[in-house]
Length: 295
Image (cartoon, rainbow, N blue to C red; front, top):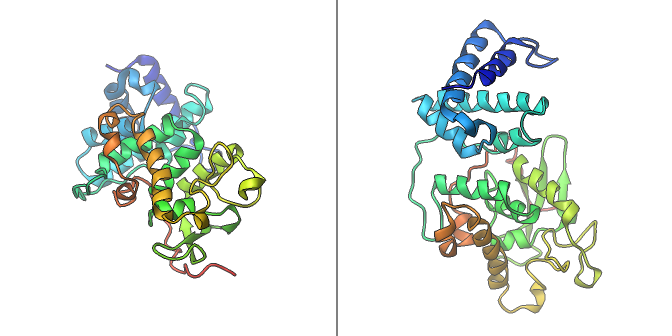
């Protein structure tokens, strides 16, 4: 049964101005929003005040059969949390965990490759990164999930801070190419979720001149001593092993933070995670001009 106080909040949300720009909801929207949110309040119970992305998506599956209706239900619920956050009724940033990279419903249920995860497992990994991981590790998990092109471990450790190109409508990075020399790079559009995670990490990035990392340049992802996660690639005979091990530790440590992944975290492979279905959404169609990085 729904808490009457929650239903009062639902009514205030659907009846009042949605925003200064758009004003009130239309009558049709009021009906639809009230229907979805009343059902969500009854379904969630006490979980309403501590939502997770998976909880909201499970509600959508329970509430609607059609994929489009499920997507709409998720959108309505996340709008309600933004409303609650603006009134200090839920912690700041709550709506971001639901807005950021929620997975559109699909019939793609391909089994994961060895060391990888299925769509539900990837959502759990993202949830663990969002809720429990340090900013650096969260950004690395997001890089493995980048949409539409997920980054491989060697590409992630090869990212340089100075290789970022921010444009009006997108952010691109000169990314090392797979199975090529470290100087072979191509511009790749990174999805907004990953850019957000990187920006959240940057204030915590440790640098040390000895290792060639500086506040404005050098390896993007560094260790607690300021060394690039891949180490000194030129001084290592097995650069791929170094890169894989650094990212693998992050993947397994983050996965172990989720109760549903804890028992199998030690079996995960960073490369297989980069080939598992990403829960991040990339809705831009203007990234087809990627090419060689500027000299």
